[in-house]
Length: 181
Image (tube, rainbow, N blue to C red; front, side):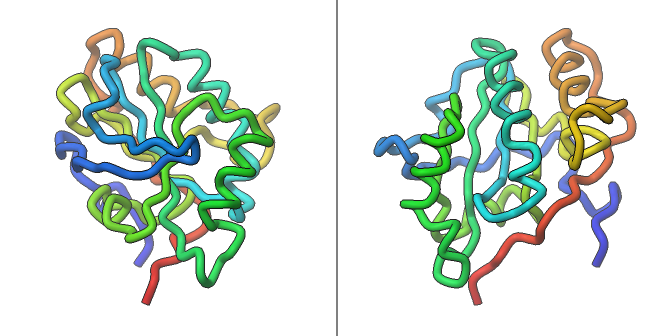
């Protein structure tokens, strides 16, 4: 089934609680994030869509530090996709200099509860941890120099300014999540 706005998780949905191991060796939970906004990114290591935008995600985390916390989680089946193992996540986070926690959702429970369908998939929550945006990063995953609309940045700015969520939210595009059987 193709993901459309009508099949996406409804705005206002509560962020699922979680406690997951980070590549930094620490357990992270939803309650560790105290910013007025929280961006949860479902991503992985091997997906070409993620590889194309992970520097943009990192830049976004730096730009909004203190105002919008960013946390990423990987829920891909690491047995079938060893590039998405915990050890590989640690190496990628180090090599890329991620400034946000990168968590391992080994049992895939949080990704399922989020309603994630692809990598990358973006979920922006307000101060009450209610969903305010779910959709794409921008309109050109392949080439940052050709981006004409920064959907996620606009959604964060609107949320922080106390404005209503974007009326039109385009679904994320990427690799399907590699669910375990």
